[in-house]
Amino acid sequence: MWIINHNNKIVCFWGIFVLFMNSSFAQIKVGVDLNGEHKISGEGVSETEEVETGFSFGVENFWEVDSMISFGLGTEYQIGRSQVDFDGDFRFESIYGVIKLNINSKKSKGTPTYILGRFGYNFFYGDSDYTGGIFGFDLGNGFCFGVGGGLSFNEKVNIEAIYSINNGVAEIENLDFDIKYSRIIISVGFSLF
Figure 1 (tube, rainbow, N blue to C red):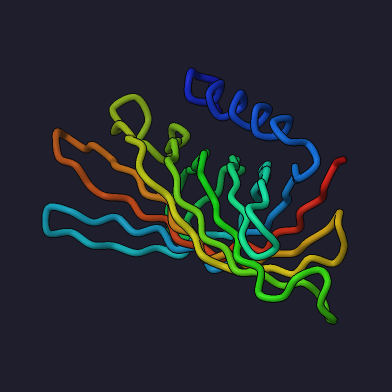
Figure 2 (tube, one colour):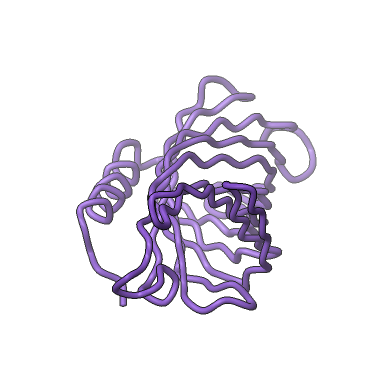
């Protein structure tokens, strides 16, 4: 069971803020998270587990510097996902900045394409099965980043592929272990205005 807490409110507020700051370039994104890997490392231990396919929702807003460069802010919410050989669901909620570099502009022939990079902070959550129940471990937040590219079909719809990494910490019996969740996100963005 997921509990709404202070961090959920921060991410929700951030999403609403980003959406309406500059509504002409605001997008809602729906993504499928593929080829996920959950890695835990520290104290001489390193284990990597395959993660089942997951889904993400987000909001991004951009400001064009010129026809080649745009800067933006975004937030992403992941629906809980589990490892193939491990009980329990985990997820991250992220807030981030993003830079988008247009490879060809809207004025040139062909479909406008771009590359992007994003960097931010994420909140790390796990259900009671993931954290070990009442005698379980605590989760800590970390940084996230991603690189990828996309195609703009028109002013309202685009599709992106991003390699993304979320980082967190698990404190187990006063020992800290780094958690790294990597995945490929295939998402579709829809402009609202």
